[in-house]
Length: 183
Image (tube, rainbow, N blue to C red; front, side):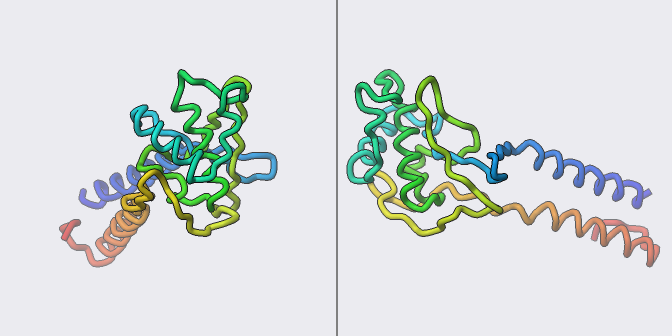
């Protein structure tokens, strides 16, 4: 009975982890690389975005000419779109790292193309899981604070460990005939 339950749990964990992986967006360009952009977060307030936008276009050195009046990406009524353009330009110029797409937690890396209307926002290409340049960047936003930079959670090891544990418990339990499954 315990073997059947453990086998059922193992199957659920395997199916659940593979289903979670398949939900992640994956956009491949013609060369097989993944296209990524640094964009303003949807939940960032306009004041934070404007402050980060001003910094990126000033001290950050982003090319903001397309978001100036008359430019293809200018939209005074949408600070999120204009900030996305500036954040992405900074990201492309400063190493394409998590830190270069932070802007006081107002930005995030995405594989969804943020281009709109006649505004085309250039992508960064990720090949074989690595950016072409992994150089550290400086000047990450108005206060240049790099703490808590929104890196990946680092929990990708949990499911393989759980699945491995359950697998070995099933194998060893069937070999020694132990009546209990979990120790």
